[in-house]
Length: 111
Length: 114
Figure 1 (cartoon, rainbow over the protein chains, first blue to last red):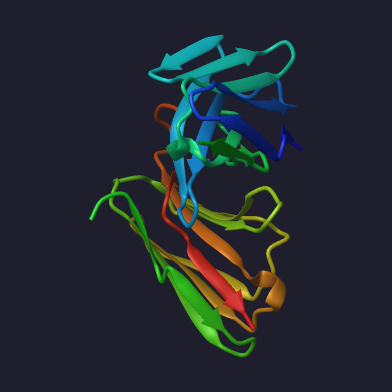
Figure 2 (cartoon, rainbow over the protein chains, first blue to last red):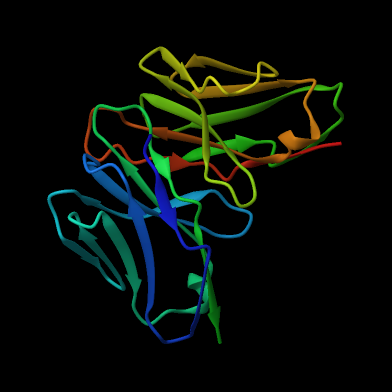
């Protein structure tokens, strides 16, 4: 079945850029998402990219997709303490029922 | 109310109790989901209701029983649970067949089984 992998933890200093990485196995993945989960809350959709795109930028967020390597990344510019959360990578193949999530990367922002 | 709301936010129950989790979505979506979130594990899809069709993960024990009376409401009935069932249970909804099909999550129900 589909597998999505992420590292568990990332620590950055406030003001620096954060890069959270994700790899997936299903080359037919159609949409790739990034979700954010703050403590005690549900998952919030941050952004997504369609598989025919290489990059998507939305304010401080930049998503890069390397389809050849099946690698997705989320870059957060000028990281703030409010960005501290768990970030989930997720993928779906249109026509299939299931969204597959990674285990989540915990981002710690040091003031 | 907007989005996806879940009640209760926190629940403590004994192994012999029967309780239910409730989810309501105000987004006009046509699919609803239950996910289980345990520490250091990927999100586990438990059940999907989509266009009146129920799809379930065959590994979910029968002590979890979903109910979807209409497209806006979803329940998860719990009975004779085990301590390892303690987790955050997340409800989500989506609009199947349109756009990116992204999931919208509720805040979750934190379940502790004693």
